[in-house]
Length: 86
Image 1 (cartoon, rainbow, N blue to C red):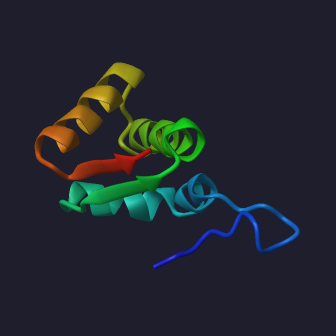
Image 2 (cartoon, rainbow, N blue to C red):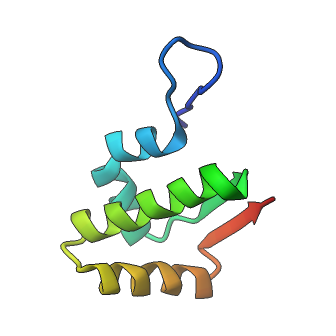
């Protein structure tokens, strides 16, 4: 588990920052069947996390943008990418 605190420190650290710091490991987990749950603010956090996840899939998987989008859509169909956003 890794945490991100955007309110408790002088430097704001967001979820997407932690994802990028560990992008190779995160992509390996995805390839091995990991499930990703995104819970929270729909307008900012969830949007940024989604965009970062696509960026990681594209970069670490050596895919183009369309292929990364298809990869993430496949995860959604398999119930491996779930969002509870409000």
